[in-house]
Amino acid sequence: MATISKPALLLLDEHTASLDPKTGRTILELTEQVIRQENLTTLMVTHNMEQALRLGNRLIMMDAGGIILDMDAEQKSGLTVSDLVEQFELASGKRFVDDSLLLRRRDEG
Image (cartoon, rainbow, N blue to C red):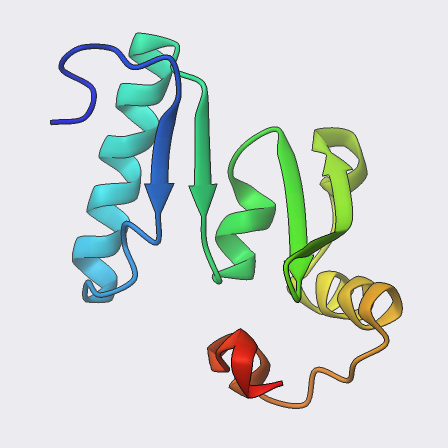
């Protein structure tokens, strides 16, 4: 529905997060199709690092409200999720030992 009036910027905030994997893939495919067809500038927020590496032409990673990584398509091409975790650890100074870092609210430190 957000694309009916062709927005200047399409904001996608975890738009597949609560979906089962099959439905999530379908929604992502449809999203990519609409973005290409309508030539939409899009900002997608995701905690899914595979999606972050695969989609889009720029990857910005944030921690504690600040940008710690900013990569263009060339810089992120060929990276794996493990590489991205390593980049996060280097940039943030935090160990990525489990998913709690992704799930912890900012006010929980």
